[in-house]
Each structure stands twice: as C-alpha cells, then as structure tokens.
Length: 165
Image (tube, rainbow, N blue to C red; front, top):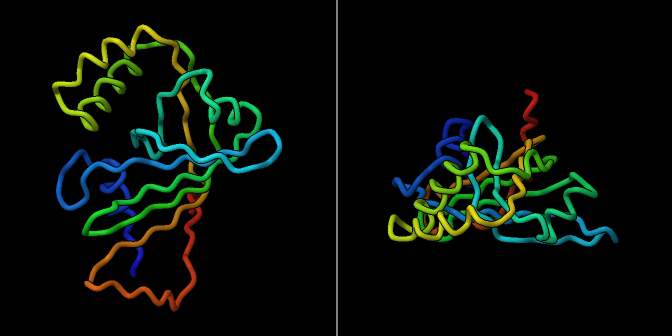
C-alpha cells in the first residue's frame, strides 16, 4: 500500500466528510507516570500542521501529557477506501481557558462528528473546564489502499517522514 503525498495527508487530516475520506476519530497515545501506554479515542482538528484536541483537565491523557509530552497519534479510515496517518510528536496543554478560537473549534468539531442537531451539546460543553491539547508532529507515515483487495504482504518497511524536512 503506497504512502500518501503531503497534499493527500493534509486533505485527509482536514477532511470534513468530503469524499473520499470522511471524518475520522484519532487515537491519542500517551504514557502514564509508570511508563505504560494509555490510548484514548478523541475528536481532533488539523490546523497549521498541528493536531488539536479539546479535552477536559481531569482526563487521564491530559494528566499524562503534563508529565510527559511524548505522544503517538493514529488516524485511520475504517471503511473503504482505507487510509491511515501515524504521527510521532510532542503535546502540550496550550490553554485551559475558553477563548473564541476554542469555542469555534468545539462548535466545528461538534458539527463534524455529530451533525447540526447536536449543537446543543456545544453550548452545554462551554460550561465545563477545558484543556486544549496541541500535538506538534516530529515525524509521520501514512498509507492508502489503491487496489482491492489490498496488498497485505508488507514487503517494505514503513517510511517515516521527519517534519523538519
């Protein structure tokens, strides 16, 4: 399965239910204080080549990020056409205050994931504390299915692309 181009990765991560990708859930992996992996599915936004997630201050992954900024994010489309982007990076909590930017991002994410009818949830969410997680990619890899059935032999190792390149 070939890797995506940089343009395809950007399109895939930004996509808002447009063909061919559709909206995906991110799997955010952090490390617990004792070094064990902790994986949590999260809504996300891709903006300015960074991944954002609007979490809650007492969420375990927020606590983990405050202790260790190393993260791994996997975003995959689980129906045809299959595709995946993996990200190794660092995360930080960039805000714990609601601002117009975070309110708008929450509103957009609610619409993307749940539809217009769920905007009531958006209003309710604003009453609770926020922890904005920003993930800066250090390296990424990807693949997409171009033929069906896909070649599952994995004859080549994954190719990682440093984000500094």
